[in-house]
Length: 69
Image 1 (spheres, helix red, strand yellow):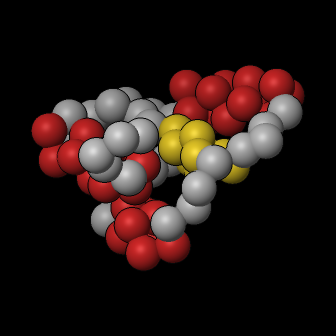
Image 2 (cartoon, rainbow, N blue to C red):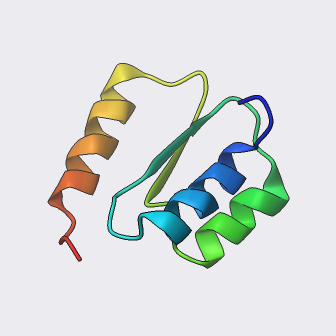
């Protein structure tokens, strides 16, 4: 994502839209921003590329089953 790393974007979403559920789909894992995003609870699931359709579908179903805030 030009201009912002995925973990930074998830943090931005958490700060501005705390009630949405989020899956980070990434091809480049930035350990620092990913660790920060997980620590403050703004990522519900992380999937790295290449991903399989079954993993993505499963993640979406799992996230959808989480309680809403």
